[in-house]
Length: 57
Image (cartoon, rainbow, N blue to C red; front, top):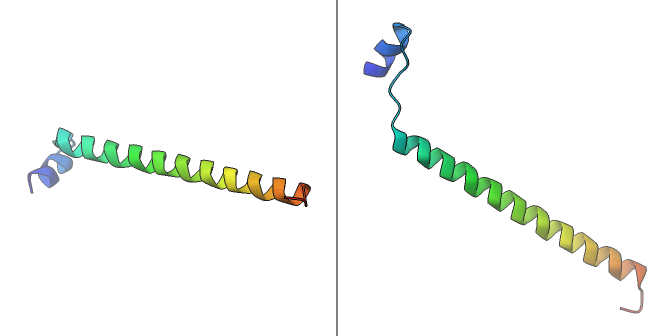
């Protein structure tokens, strides 16, 4: 309720620094997972293209 009162008065509400850190960690983990997945898909597509170009494989 304190946060609601602070918002109504136009004052910034108190945010827990640990909560911000957790949100940052989650965003960083999501970015890492997305980057890793994109790299894996790129590798798979390269393999598939190589196999199509060289039918002797």
